[in-house]
Length: 308
Image (cartoon, rainbow, N blue to C red; front, side):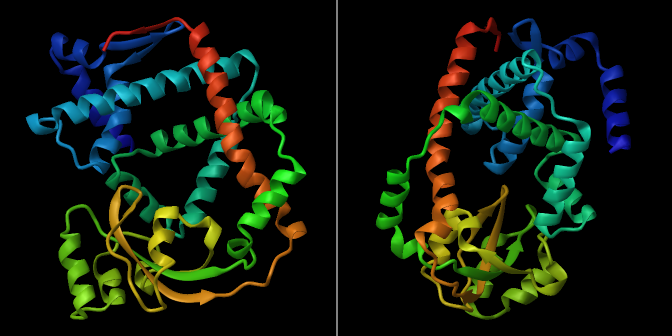
């Protein structure tokens, strides 16, 4: 990391003035604070990689420009929120970010070295990832301080949701899964076809090529609560039987597959035990709607000059 930063600084120091000015070009000014082209490109790079776009390819130019504009809007909103947090003395300590960062690594079931490699594959640095964590915590704090207290979920709403979704909620089921994450420089379609044909086992491919967690153990993630799973993953898994493997899916910007090892049936749950869970589900869209109203108000009051 330090060596990379050293090379970056060295590279900038020997650039001709015109190139250096281009990198430091101001793309937006938000209440007196600037966002540079370098900042924008750093934020855009992981998403360009995830969507497999080539900025130098004329065929991708329109998509890249659209993506840059959308990400710039997000950066402007985040900066406005940061400024508002400073005004309200809402802070996120460095220790909090570090703690959440290490929790994230633990939950991913990756070693610190494997996690660093995953960041590199997604064109992210440790610092940029920690900044995303800090922004997420800050957003949650602002939600709680300015929005959350105004959100009410009634008892009737909870009861209605329980009645409509009783069959889905009555068992706290878990799935035992194994994960295979393909590196970006490998033909994932070819390996997936070989797994499907039976010419090679899922576990063999995991041990041979996977850059995901528990690769040496065949990618076994253990038991995971159904409600904690990505909805897109669950859509495939819900129709599968133990031993079957999903088609290729997106896993944090990389292609991958999941194997369903076992379905673990949970105990029936009552309305009383499910109430906190249902309340959280019902609060989320209300929070998002109220938060959008709040950020729209902040945006209207802000002085924003977009130069890109």
